[in-house]
Every structure is written in C-alpha cells, then in structure tokens.
Length: 243
Image (cartoon, rainbow, N blue to C red; front, side, top):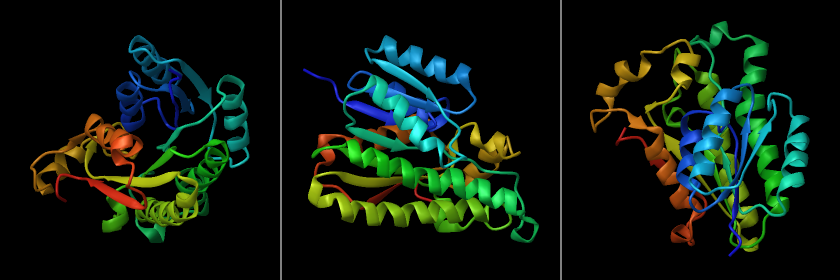
C-alpha cells in the first residue's frame, strides 16, 4: 500500500519533532525547519528508523514569499499530500504592549498567522478527500498572556478563527481542519522567549499539577489526522491539563 504523506512545519524540535517521530510508522514525512539543521536531522534520523521516507525542507517562513519555495521543494519529492501540521511558531521576550515595536509585531504575525494561512492554502490545493489539516494554537489564545506575549496570544486567536473558516470552506471537499490548543508544555520555546524556568513556575497552576509533554500534544494531533477522527472538523482540542 502507498503510505500517506504528512507535511509538518517547525519539525526540528518540540511539538513538531514529537509529531514526526510518532507519525513515522504510518506516514511518509516532509519536515520543514528554519535554522536548526541539527535538530531537523535528528528528527529525520529517528523517523527513518521507524520506517518513514523523509524529506527535509529549510525555509524561513517570516517571509511570506518563501511559502512558494516550501511547496516547490515539497513537489519535487512528493506526488501527493494527505496531512498538514501547521506547527511553526515563535514567541519573543516577555513585554507589555506599550513596549512592542513594529518589527516585533510584524515578525510575530508573519510566522504565527500569515505563514500558516498561506501554507494551509497551498496544502489544500494538493489534498483530496480524506485529507486533514491540524493547526497548532495555544492556550494563550484563551488567556491573552497579559504582560508577556499579548501579540503571540493574538496570533494564536487569529489562527483559531482561520481554522474555523477553513474547516467550513473545505468540509464539502472531504478535507477536515482542526486545531490543538496546548497549555504549559515542556518545549524549547520557553527558553527562546527568555524564560527557561517558565514551565516550572507555571506548572502548579495546572489542575493536573504538572506541565504536559510534546509527545502528549503529538498524540492528540495524530488522532485528529487519523480516520478515527473522520467525523471531526472545525474543532479546537485543548491539551492543557484542565487549565
């Protein structure tokens, strides 16, 4: 049987890498990364060991024009696209809105909202009935992240609205669109935002009393991509320990 093909953006670490590793026994993979070649190669090595055919694609999604390059590279190695995980995203140093710069906000919107919208549009052109898209949002979309990442939260809120609209557009074509909303998850993104201790500080606020893992989010993503979720679309799944 022909194995389905899954494209994952931001697959060099965190949730993207965990999703690739968990998907590898059942999917062939196109793994996008920006600058972390070492992480991308480690993810690809693990996926290949689990049976996947893997393509690595390096693209800077802060420039919307590069989405076309991403799919040009995809098309060279893959004849079809059956699943998309829109995972690539960034935070910035914690700051109040009064201290935001135009450059910070433009970068946040470009990577966290503009790029996933354009990537999903290109993906949908290549998909057929039975395919699925999962957009990776954040519990910040519900909380707003005041005093820290209001811009990040706003982009994730926008991504959820986009997911809803796209799900309605593609439902008649048999393409499902859902989102996951991770809470406090142990990933490198916290250190990239200048708060390497953030998980330990916030974990006590979670009703389950701990942070989640990237693998736990990956399991939710892969369920939404699977035939087990064949009647699930236009849904945001919280993976947040009850918070």
